[in-house]
Image 1: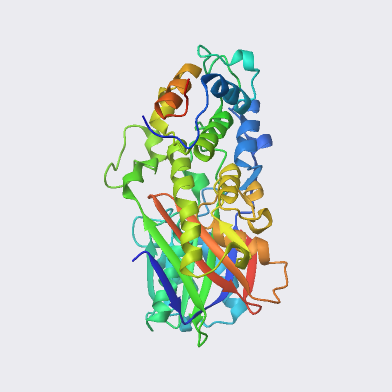
Image 2: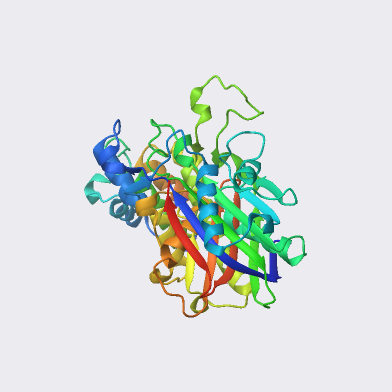
Length: 340
Length: 86
């Protein structure tokens, strides 16, 4: 079943963390033609990116976000029943990055901790897992972490990818609630598109590739464009139908920050008001799935939430995989953002 | 031949491509190539794909793009998709 409504959970807090280092695409890029850089910047909308050096992993970004969030919420580590780390840039093949963070947060050995290998679609999927754990009584409190360092897997000679990606981590706290509030999720996959966004080498299919470029991202842009414009408008409409809402009922459509041109194209197709589609990739880059919670914190951190805000969260990309979540932000939510 | 949402003449198709690539219309002829048209770059390609999707309901994949070396190849593709009618 790809469409589901859940109850019994509340969103207690969302925290994001990005590297402090800024890469200006036009000033700091060497090796590419300046006019070509200008065109890519104009098309994708990415002027600057927050990038991690080799000492920073997704787990580091998520750990800092999680520590800030737990302190803000005054949650004891021992009270957390589940920790899910959604990432495709883990520290190691094994053990899971969730176990490393479990250690660093001092969580109980009763806490179920595991990684989920999803990227661009990862945030709604992660929230769905948390919501399901809460609804079934498997957990009263869950931490959903989502972090990526995609700037570290783009090759500096690849014009198609090098200028696009930034890095980010996030932590989201979900807990059981007596409220009847429903969350809606739509979750989809199409493995036939697995090669459209792929790192071919280093995994067990090809541990030691002869071509060093196989350790870096290979992206088929046109196929991804077609996938996005075909699947995401339907995703938006299906999510509205599932939750019995109209565009006017949704306060913000928070997209995975993939590409400004494509986001605008889809917004136009779905008649989404521009003001309801926040865009942050101009200064953060495309940080994959964590760009969704990052956009959430950047959009609402400095706003006073006096009335519940209905948000549709949209993830789409690697897999191919695409997903949505529709839920509400309430005035008691804790939001924060930091740099590492 | 596929049925596109809308159909145009070849002359209109060339004018459309000129507009999307920000090129003077007289330069956008079937013999023109990526090398001779500065506007046939990643941005121009994305604009072309968006227009094909939104206006004509037609998709162009990476394999198809790789095979296009001239404006004539784009026109042939549009013809095969039922976009161009004489």
